[in-house]
Length: 284
Image 1 (cartoon, rainbow, N blue to C red):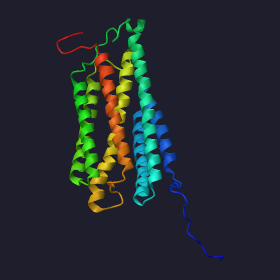
Image 2: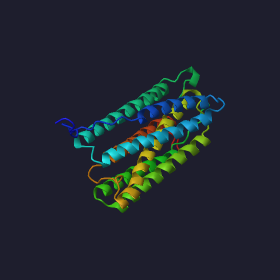
Image 3: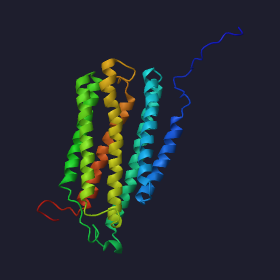
């Protein structure tokens, strides 16, 4: 039988990932992104340029990595065992993100319950004018909760193989997410305090900024699936979203709902409680 070769057949239902350069380059670019952002925050010359280049590098390498994963799924390498592992990984990732935000809220609540002498012994600190929760924050709450309904609509439409409503629902979700980000940015511009204004300013911008970053990341993930819906299903390509097996989309939707839930806590803890419970026309 010499000279005769046989194709290798897996005796297990798992997918052995082929060697890839993208994890290495993504981690390298993520390190560059963190370092360049630090330089930019400390106003080093060229920090903004390096941060921009690093951000583009992260998006490009991440996109190439996602492309390979989509191809693997399209050619049938994501078996039921593989998708189960992916779902567990997504759940663990969201749990770790919940722990991250829990630590932020813990710091904020501790500082508000025990205001030190540097804060004037009161919360919000002396000379800090908090942002009213009944203006832009309330608008953002409505926008984000509505986006949770539209992304659910898109998900059910995909399961029902209704291409039009799935595109409409996903498109509305992206529009609402973009408006949320724009409103958050305008709130930062008009904020009466900055990150340097005591622990209140530091924690406010840390918590709301991290949440805003999660909204942007979630929007990018949903944008990928929106493009796959628009181009993949119409042309029956390898990038189409399977109505029965779409674990990546489910993960993005779970992540988006997680962002919605976190914002509810942000709105209650940071804006309402942290703002002194001021109601329109009434101070409690």
